[in-house]
Image (cartoon, rainbow, N blue to C red; front, side):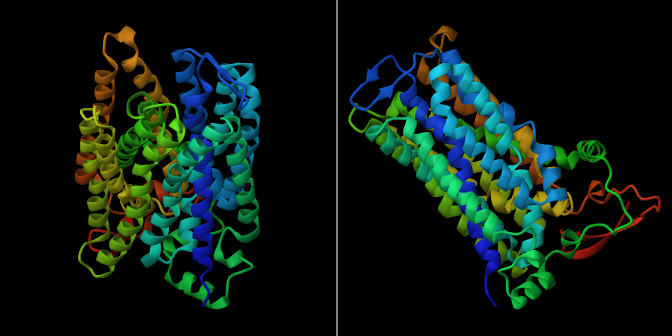
Length: 476
């Protein structure tokens, strides 16, 4: 038996790494782009953008990113993850190549381009769960999901130091050309080696194909019968939004994303303002400090994935209880770290170490909230994740605006106090969403996952009650 499913996972891992490079390269490059001088020896041009313009440049990506979350997930369910993710990455690569030219025109040209780039990358995460349910044996899913998604954690680990080195040696323009070129190479590998399902993959062995088909989630791997038509997307979305358990996931995603983007988007600016000293290799220092939390998250998510599969396989905890444990590990330590960091700004090393510990535990999210989405909606996991990720990424649009407002001298707060208030908001959101998940997370397939429009009334749906891991007949 070969391991083509893990080749797919590795390519997806690298794809999410590239995805994050294209998402965050500007967040770091802007620390050199914005200023009031020109270094002719390195051909470094700086722009005198106002704090207001800078905050719009940083947040604009998310205005596009939230728009196609739901349609993106639905497109993947209908046309496949391979097509949706591949095309979205190609479009984003093209925008990245254009950013240096657009920056020379106006900050608002960059805002428009980043909105378009956000639109291209918007389907990324909602498009992936349909691929997971087709390619993963159920008992390997936590490892598969955790490893694949951890490519996103590698993004900041490599991108921030890489950007620092490029900016210290060649200037910020090369940041965009380098990251776009790496991502373009990935697109070629994606279309050559990855197929939508193991059944259509040219590289897989018969033995591995048989193994996957026998051990994957049968309810998730098969669609409704051929006479059934899919209902309109709006009907599915409305049914999901009527379900309180969907709002539990939305709250979880929003809190997680607020804490993530608080450091991902504003981290380089925070480090540049408070923690780096001197001009020599300033951007390399910033990159190394900013990447530490994401490096910890990258390693720990692998450990959490193995542990989650182990404790479920051994019968030590049920699947839903494992999800609650890892969701708590994701949110609670991450709630303590931001507020502690706000009071350690006098010691940059301690400041970064504290947030690194918090981010290490955030690596458990692949075994918590994401798993719960696939539990409740194996057939429509892409649409579900699109809804939750859309609401969650509102945090990405809000964090730069809120942070720049709080640290602006005109608010009456000194910058240190402003940063403390900003990070404290992450603490409050994490605690509240952790409590909601523990009390109200869904433990079985939901009714909205079985809606069809055929004239024959379906009264029963075979699903899985994950409080005891036994089959359950749902009445719908």
